[in-house]
Length: 283
Image 1 (cartoon, rainbow, N blue to C red):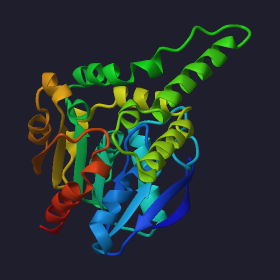
Image 2: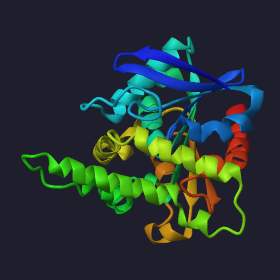
Image 3: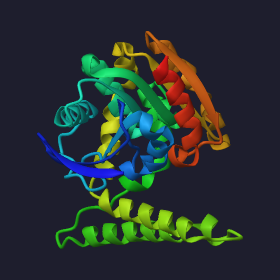
């Protein structure tokens, strides 16, 4: 798997690339990096030229601008295609990435072939108000904060709070209670911890961008053939399935439900997602 940097209007974007053939641009979730797409890139094999950029403020890309929007990140990803001399690409977006992908398909239709929008149910709620409520239940700790103090001690309290979250990630309870541990499991947790530190200053901003994003209005503008993959877990049954509502907003869209697929779907379910994408892209 190759790595590279490309210059854009908001700074340098770091990316991974694998394979040859039709271009597939992969847009990752929060609070991860493009490394989360490595299993999917491998599963798609050499038939596709898979490109996975780190979003601004994540991984090894330059910081996320304060005035960024999903639409401006879509423009950055078009610049990535320009830098790679790719005229049109298929898109795969997971969680935050599905919002960027939708914005790309809506605003730059000539650059998009087909689109795959992947997300757990909370990420696919088309009503902005209802989606924001569902997402806030998951990300509330990032918006608690501490009242500013003249001596800056609130910054130290925030620092301590973030370290507590990092320690909880490092010492994952499910890992500690496992009957057997291997080095690959520990390496995965190590990478998650690194990603958490790398995006620390961007995570609140990108969730605020998500809250401001009008997904329904954007989907109505999408003309590219689209596959919606809804990742369903028992913990989100109370939200009701949302994929059909998304599909109904678009001109040419279809739905695939993936049961028991959670935040690690692009890794744990890479083979199933790759099969679905290959069928969809080849039609």
